Amino acid sequence: MVRERREQWRRHQEVHRERVRERRERHRERTEHRRERYELRRAQRHERAVERRRAVALGLRLSGRSLSTVFGLVVAVAGIALTVCLPFVGPPALRTTRWFARRQRRLLAEVFGREVPEAYLPAMTGERLPGGKFRYGDRIERKERSPWEVEFWRLFGDPASWRDLRWLACAPLLGLVALVPTLCLLVGALGQLRVISGPGHVMLAALFVSGWLIAPGCVAAYRRWSVALLEPPRNAALEQRVQRLTETRADAVDTQAAELRRIERDLHDGVQARLVAMGLNLGTVEQLMETDPAAARELLAQSREASANALRELRGLVRGIHPPVLAERGLADAIKALALDSPLTVEVAEDLPGRAEPPVESAVYFAVSELLTNAARHSGAGRVWIDLHHTGDALRVQVTDDGRGGADHRSGPGTGLRGIERRLGTFDGVLALSSPRGGPTIVTLELPCALSSRRTSTC
Image 1 (cartoon, rainbow, N blue to C red):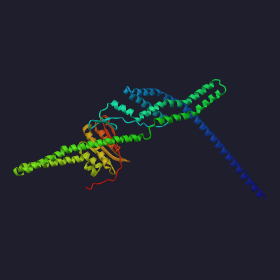
Image 2 (cartoon, rainbow, N blue to C red):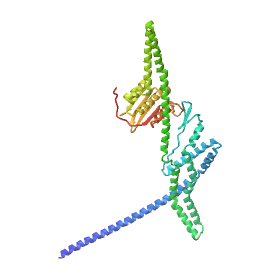
Image 3 (cartoon, one colour):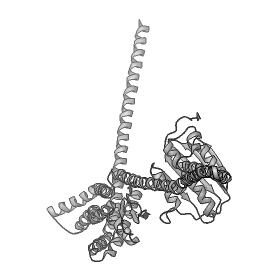
Image 4 (cartoon, helix red, strand yellow):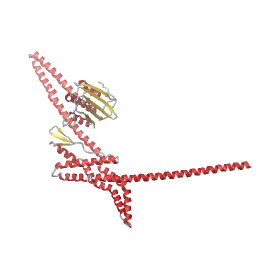
């Protein structure tokens, strides 16, 4: 009996000690939880205080930068206003606006990590067209414009210029918004130094606290409105792409018309003249068969030679329109055939698992042919390397020569490189050129396209 009571007492003591341990553990956990919450709130208060201090300092910096644009605004507005009577003043004024806008974009990227893209129109160059006309962008003019006129209409016709001017007009107001917290803190702090009783003291204290509290919001508003004023609309990239495709389509139409005129001229001056001469010779042969067989045989030999020459010219003409080797063997073999016909030493490295669409192959073929011709005629090169491969969804061709370099596809209208660039632009392709003085010259062609399986000729 005594032993059972002792056992019950021992179990009771163990249960009691277990409960005490549990209560202590819960108390310790609650204490740690309160301490963690206290430390968290303390860290948050410290972070908010640091953020507010940084916001005040940053607002002072941003306000100084924005208020300094008043000079640029005055110059831009005065220059644009004087453009009516002094047109040469307008472009410098808009370039000044662009300088301030670029500086603001760099500030937004540096301080807030917000990259604001530029959507300026590219530099406009004139191109002489057949018939004495000139192309400037998507416009065709009868007279050639001076470089100053081209620059004037490019700047004034660019929506991005007026977007920058809109931001420049609002920049002083944004600077005042960023300066509001500093002014509140300054007025509230200076007001506390004076002996003011009653509601005035409370209002100055509230002004000081409000300046401290609204600093992050004012900086965020500055960032948001600066980005909204400088950022191009979402369809700006699409509009530029449409404009580029419009220009390249017009170039393709002009190129096609010029090609048709060349074919017509070659047929008229070459093959047609030879066929007419053959007909006259055969008519004379009919008359001389009975009277002078020797002269008839000589005219027949001349007619046979003229027919061979006409056939050769027709084959050359067909090869210039669409080479048979390109249609039968594909782009890689066609470029290898160009390498064999070139007077230079040409090495071709290709890795094409399939074939591109025929128009793309034709554009790349004639582009490489033009590059090999330029290397042989103008660069003084002895060797050329051609690398042809397909990566992702683009066909990439790189042509390198060891010539003297110094090539520039922007140097003037009518150059072969600009013709290649227009030809590729029809397919949304690009041309990249690296040609320092002394060489080497590296031309990279890239066209977006997909490859199909290899086709073999059934001929």
